[in-house]
Image (cartoon, rainbow, N blue to C red; front, side, top):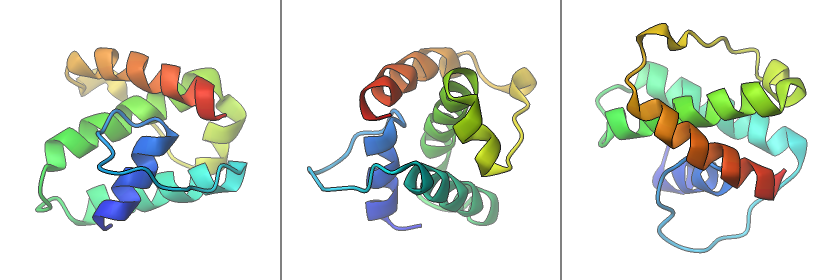
Length: 104
């Protein structure tokens, strides 16, 4: 997953810093596609730069989506097990929740 895809995920609400303004597709299917692509990237490429930061931001966005937009979350087909997540995910979750409220 290239930097542009991570920036797109940031526009959807993942607490990552987007490097530049960009147009992105705000339809419901787009967020599902971006989340699936990010999940694939994190699962299959743990050697990528900033892996832990990206993983935490991804988890926070997923938790916000699952909690506040369960219909969208179900369409991802993913499962969450936050039992072993670090506490910083809660802070990132709050940021993701606020951003999702703006774009969805």
